[in-house]
Length: 470
View (spheres, rainbow, N blue to C red):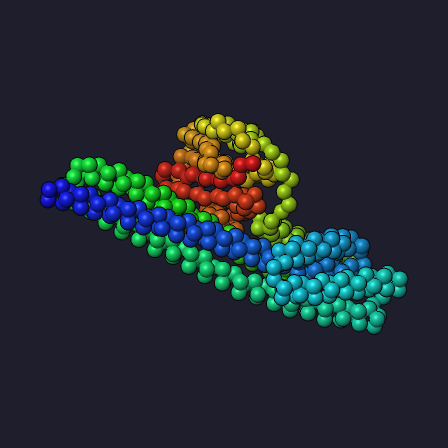
């Protein structure tokens, strides 16, 4: 009788222990899910803030471009300089509407944007009035034109000041959201550690119950396996969240690079414009020797070269409009390989293709994506020894994601270079511009995709690109 009561009590104790453990794991899972949702929400808000900051800078930069074009027209009296002015005017309205839509939940930012919009309209009114006055008065710069120009300059300073206030506000929001995102990340870490500790205690508990009841042991083993699966699932979720955080930091670094590029472009192009104008004026006004004219041509060519380098940098970090169409990833990769066929045959590279059987389509700008993949493939070909190269193109499906893997057996990349791989002007190739992979990253980010690279010296390099299925 006592043995039976003791057995019943032991069974009840075991069942209660497992019940409590199951309840704790359930709570841990729900907390992890809640923390993960919060982390994703904060990530989206960080993305939103970046877009507002970038578009605000584009808005101010567009207005500055209009002002530079206006000044160029006043100095040279050539209507060709007005083309960027009219382009900037259309772009300014588009950017303003986009920023206003993105800040619809922030009344203070809306007020600042409305003020900027009014000033921009006034600025363009002054530009238009000045252009009419200038053209109808035989291109003469009189006091009326100077007054209008001074008033326009005052408005521009005010627009810059308010734009800076908008960016400062977004910087504060960005820092707050980053802090909240890090807090969510720490919460997830704590929950996983607690789950690890709980799983360990369950294993110990199962070991002691094994010696008492075989039935209890079997149940304990089954429960432990279940808990371990849940733990692996949560570890996988944490790993995914870590990758998203790394990707987010990459996007933040990319956005910062774009801001620096635009600042450099603005500060350098104005002096370049003055240099070109002065060179053209000297050619017209001075009857110099042939050597002198050659020197002026040299100045002009190098000025244009600098301007082109700035344009290439801006294009590699600038979000562009997509001409999207539906197509299969295999078709896109095959068309890209055709573009690299001459290089492949010249280097005698063996191409191995392994495409997924998934028939779902992706929505991409075909020409831009071919540029992105071609940059990766060309780099792979150049990294491999002639006659011994093996280029692998592989596609996989991960739920609603299309994963593209491009690997080579080249010389590989060291860790320091790998960390700088997507930075502008970073290259280990003689004669390379260092903008190819920066442009590739920009194209992938524009498609809401992800790109990463893994490499080992002597073993080759692997690029992984992730895109969304339709």
